[in-house]
Length: 79
Image (tube, rainbow, N blue to C red; front, side, top):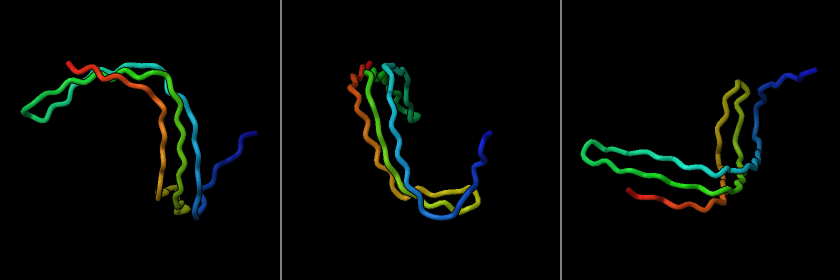
């Protein structure tokens, strides 16, 4: 039987761990005058983060502090 998630009011803490998989992204950024191309190539890596926030009891919450660490080697191919 599935349980129901209820919004509660008060402070909370959270922690996440994950893995990033080898991948590449190609794109361009333009400011109206100049266009710059980018193509970072990321290796496999892991990530972890912790955070604290406050839940308002109505489904909304505000994160007060988040700390993230990502362990990836990257190589940027500038064109």
